[in-house]
Length: 206
Image 1 (cartoon, rainbow, N blue to C red):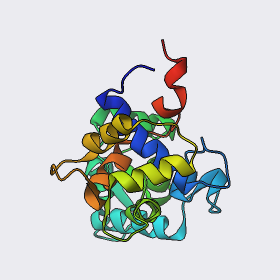
Image 2: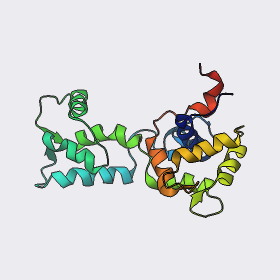
Image 3: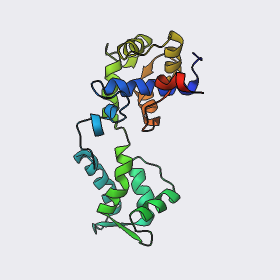
């Protein structure tokens, strides 16, 4: 088996997190760690009440006159208020997708339609921290080598010590050889929607 790379390390940590968060369902279900979609017991489509309120608050920041609409020039800032960095080209495509490419304003329902895909693909901090606690079973506030080793064993992942250390090294930013909440959160937020990564497909690559 080829030695792990830095990319494998980062992907491996979040893949195990996805699997740990989704026990009882498909190990490749990207929604399971987030508590949404097929394995999460939440709404299959649309936003949760909490997410809808977050979108509403972002919209109202710019709908200062309470007209129920905002200027398209404020869309980028509106998405930034939700924690998303979007480029002008992306906003133009969103406008085309909702048949509003020639409009100068966006209604709240249209803003929701534009924001929904991004909200659904985003891990909220609370949900990520729930998965973190599955690793941190000794409640130290960090994920140690032993924690990672235990989760790998429970998930049936045959990983060497070097591979486990590689995962920690990839996520560890302060050099203490452990993964704290902020480091874990950063790794999980970097993840795309596809948890099929090197942990599962190592032997199939190349």
